[in-house]
Image (cartoon, rainbow, N blue to C red; front, side, top):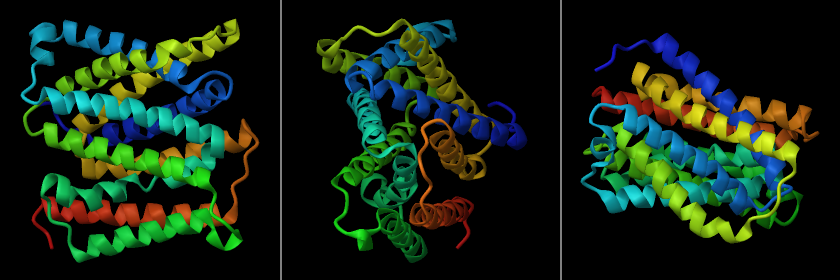
Amino acid sequence: MRAQDPRRGILLMVTTTLVFAIQDGMSRHLAATYNVLMVVMIRYWFLAAFVVLLAARGTGGLRRVAATRRPWLQALRGVLLAAEICVALLAFVLLGLIDTAAIFIVHPLLVAALSGPVLGERVGWRRWAAIAAGFAGVLVILDPTAGALRPAAAVPLLSAAMFALYALLTRYVARTDTTATSFFWTGTTGAVFMTLAGIGFWEPMAPADWGWMAALCLTGAAGHWMMIRAYELAEASVVQPFSYFHLVFVAAIGTVVFGEEIRLHVAAGAGIVVGAGLFTLWREGLRRTGGT
């Protein structure tokens, strides 16, 4: 077991959120010009090569890392995450970075809500109250008083639900499989799925955009590696709250690069969701340490 270093873990998590925010900006640019399935497919080709290289260099090689007691669940995880990324990119195009990220941050609350039926964990009334408050924050973001709710808002909500299910399945397979094994299956099965789904949508890409595509692939692999390393250096309850910096960085990129606007109701609703999420994480930490 590696030595814990909470400060480095927190720094890595904040850096990870910045890398993922930059990745979101590049994804928004490419998905607005090219087919979403093709963009995600190329990204997964690089990710698959990255995880295979890591596995081959590890002790025991590919055979040890690929070994799992739950192959069908691992495959489902990989397909689910790939599909979720496609939905998220579509949301970037439809709603922009800021509104998408503001709605997507509800996913930790969905994880808490579904941890009972999926994992058999107990969810107390305080966490249920936080979950309800978080969804009230989503309603503030959607601003139903302004008229009919935008149908496009369902897209990032679907993305959040898919990612929450992916996170729950990841926690479930972690009972028997290592992080390296789950990472390997995420990259390889996702690449197979995206190749089947996206190869028919191949289209020529401008030379400059191949540069953006290469940067997207590199930041994707680097971001996943840093996130895994952050969780190795510190407990999830320590580093997870800092993942909300992603919303700050996305808002900065959305306003500066894409000329998006941070509307008051979106900022207020996002604040409610973040507060509810932080409370849920705090309660989860108490539960794991035997608190009440």
